[in-house]
Length: 120
Image (cartoon, rainbow, N blue to C red; front, side):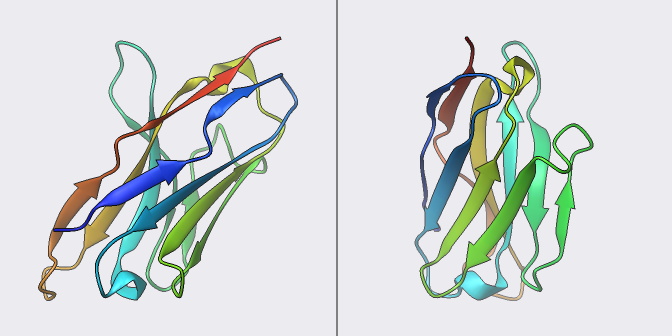
């Protein structure tokens, strides 16, 4: 089992910045494919950004150029830097780990979620 703990959510004014962090348990973080999702009220979770074990990144169109995902394998963390936030970014943000099936920790794991509110 892999546990994911998110931190860094909160309230920010439009145009502001926030950094979300997710720390994973487990022993082989470097092979995890990590991602951030968000969920709006009444909607399904949607992918915001992902970073593979090989550091390949992908972003939703709505956040490209404003958000940056990175990872630190030594600290077992993945970070989402969010800039130029707009009210439409208000959501619950979730960290996700996809662990390859060839490992002992195989599975798809979610954090508990952290709220981000963007308003004046």
